[in-house]
Image 1 (cartoon, rainbow, N blue to C red):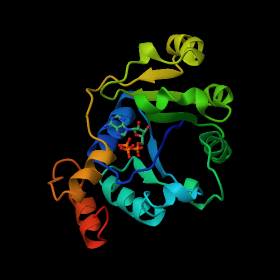
Image 2: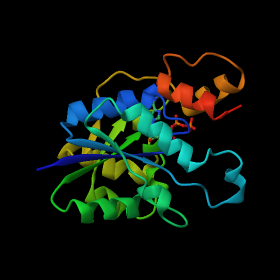
Image 3: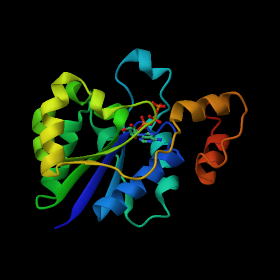
Image 4: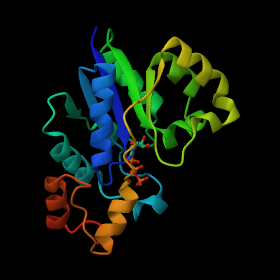
Length: 203
Ligand code: ATP
């Protein structure tokens, strides 16, 4: 059976923390493929000023993943109109890969919000979930709504907590550094750094 990881994010920009956990997910779960899914452009005016155009975020993602043959990027969440929900993304991949085992990959900050996602209870029954720890998060302090599911999913193996050490970097920190002219080497792929410079992003 094919095992496919689906990794959604804003990737604004993609950084070494994303690559680090994607590799670790693929290794620990023996995934055949990890599909990076950059989010589309926001349909709310307010966010429009802050999020980099999807075309750039997808291009940077493609640059950063090109060394690992297990990695692919999809524009599935970019080309859909209106709000894109993880629930709908998973239905699309389920149709495309009816017999695969699907894993939704996320960081612990996202996991702690899961109960606010569209049809989250159906979602967690249809996919496996794997979580990478981020600094400051404690899954033991998850919101009450998630308690029952976390307990049973850890037991039945449909929820996996990544064993690899944390890698504390965020896109917010990368954007802050670039804005202030501070170095980002070692934190993002040099090809992404070059792309950012050429396209004058995050200034
Ligand atoms: P921002 O700082 O703009 O919020 P981010 O660094 O959290 O961005 P996203 O593109 O929002 O990056 O993240 C996509 C997914 O990857 C989310 O599920 C997030 O929790 C996870 N993630 C991002 N960075 C890390 C990291 N360093 N360790 C573990 N998970 C991470």
